[in-house]
Length: 418
Image: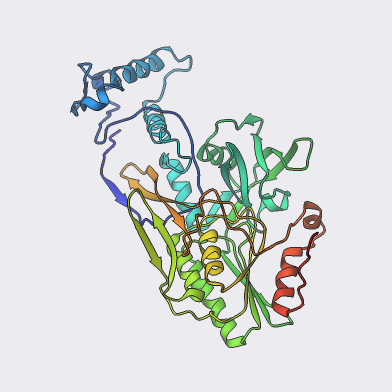
């Protein structure tokens, strides 16, 4: 197995909510492991050296003893009770641990299988239950069930935390590992044990996997000439489909637009900028702040919908790109935000594909709205807070959508509490 340090970069526009954690330890770039040679042939010969890398930098040698790494490697190879131990899996595990040593849940190494699943997710087609998951407050959580997918049909909701997957506890489990357990061939079942706010007991939910094809944009116009545009994700086809919706809105001279981004976990930055541009035009959409610099991303098209009354629907499952769009429209006053506090995923990941099919995502910056409000871990607060209870969901009553329509029709009356 040859692992090269050369990489193929994807644009720094990926801000998908895919989150990871794990342990420690580092491999120097360019390190080579050959399966045919075996692990002992690449063990450093001297305490202060890494094979093929020369001397360890003095500042690093004071804190890190690479000899210990190889001692543990050999112990696992010799003593682990299930033999043989895969060197490839040990290697990938070491890389995962190194990246996780940053302590940032969004900085993650993806082995080839995980990288393939990640790419499939962006393309909008995969087999599983149809739910975005993440880690919040150190718990594996449902960020957003996809509309019409098995997870939603089974009753999973944003904010549910996953306690067990097929009886395996999720404590300390990374998102990628959880995805590996949850996804599977269509027609098979997975059992999730979940906790839900307001429920005293854990809930056991059996879900039959299906092939998931995400329709990222849906729209309709009602009898009051109000268009509802539902965005479920920001992937490669979203901009084109959204442009079709805009064309119909302009031709129909709609009275107003409801942009529904509830339970939208995000996606591509470039797509978020495309969507926001319909209202903000060429003005700033989002500010990226890195270690010692800031970069402003501006809109890329004319403001075709500026002036059209707009309400944006958000909730706790609205994350990443959804927060960028809603934050920009709120800053400029081009839309009224209705719903509940958004997720608060406002960090930037640089995605690099490696030659063996694996990949690495590294957090390089954080997002801020055009007015400088932080998104990360804070989220976006709606202008009009409207809760949406489990009971209302089951009864197919949607108070958030109803409020949005009332605002556009001019019949909304705010409730003032004493």
